Length: 355
Picture 1: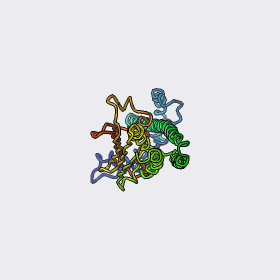
Picture 2 (picture 1 turned 30 degrees about the vertical axis):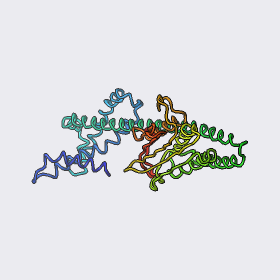
Picture 3 (picture 1 turned 180 degrees about the horizontal axis):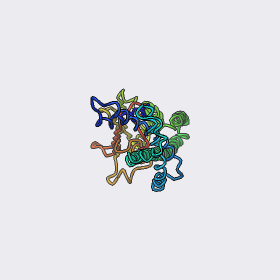
Picture 4 (picture 1 turned 180 degrees about the vertical axis):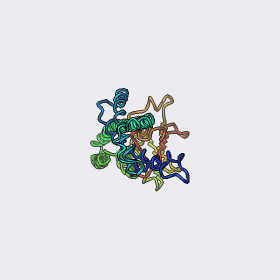
């Protein structure tokens, strides 16, 4: 239907210069007959092109083949055109049988008809190239998405054994000292493993789910450090539904406790805050511990937990869509600040394939 409308519009446009109030039907019907005939010929041209034994990149050979095909199909077009004119009452059917039919037809419009053939062929090749280009782009996009997903999964696989080893090491230190507390730690570790398995196929989870995981980890650390460890939470209610990277808070808090507070006999406080600012999610993990050494650098000095977390965030939010900074606090201790796009969990607005 759309193709018929296109050829009809072309017929009307080409008929306009020859129309007049006293003579409009014959020029209009003649132009429509011409372009409707090409409309009937176009599928045959496409069919011929599709069956040529040449690859997509062999355009030269395809053009040479069409030099032959264009002669035969242009001749056929003249027969279709005269038949169409006869159907519209513009000439008699017997014209087709006249001896000088082809000679008269060639004399009247051979060059123009041959040019139309090549325009149709050119349009066909343009669409063929466009389809091939789109297919290539889709294949490349799928490959990039697979690569990005594999890279993110590999980073997470690095993180989980690291976390598990450290948690087990913490528990083992309490087994002989206080078996009852060690059993409590093991219960929380079991919950941690359960939550980790439940989210193993998810790169992002709701913030509330991430906090649930963190709470079990903090419970283990509170058992270990007792009153020497204080936790200060300031989580805005609307942040709980935000989508965040899975298992990203635990390495940050672990780093604050192990490298910031555990070196002080008096312990200290870890503060975790999260709030929404416009369409951004601002997350901060603070401690009042010993701070970073003067020569410390995020690119070269960060341990496995920090390095993997930073890489995962950069991979999940590419092209500058996230921020990750770690620095000393003015009053002592360390501050980690993360800046992410604010998205409600479950809304698929992020494309990992661009990572």
